Image (cartoon, rainbow, N blue to C red; front, side, top):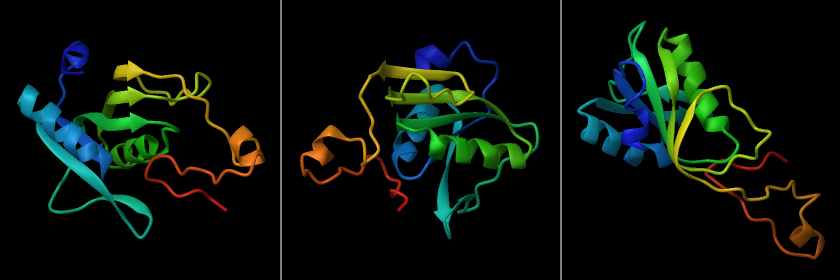
Length: 142
């Protein structure tokens, strides 16, 4: 992934959403000699804690382990934009978004995997009586 993002304009900070993005952002920062920070959820909202700050005009690269829906990535993007940062793109180990799910940011992935994603009502295995599997770190909305 580091080789793929070298084409980007100057990256100042790599930001990973907890929990999956912490290790990827740390390692990318280590390899590229860049600061790495992470976001956390506080009362359901993505925030910066632990003394992490982002200044206006800072060039940010978001780092993830796996992108499925892109919801966490977009929450981090929104937080960074609220703070006045420039989000340059997203680096991830695995991009498993459906083709139709364009999150509006350049994505630099180690691998792209096309895996069907179903709502529980449409899932063929669920229709056969299987228990739905919860992907990622986000809870299903009921």
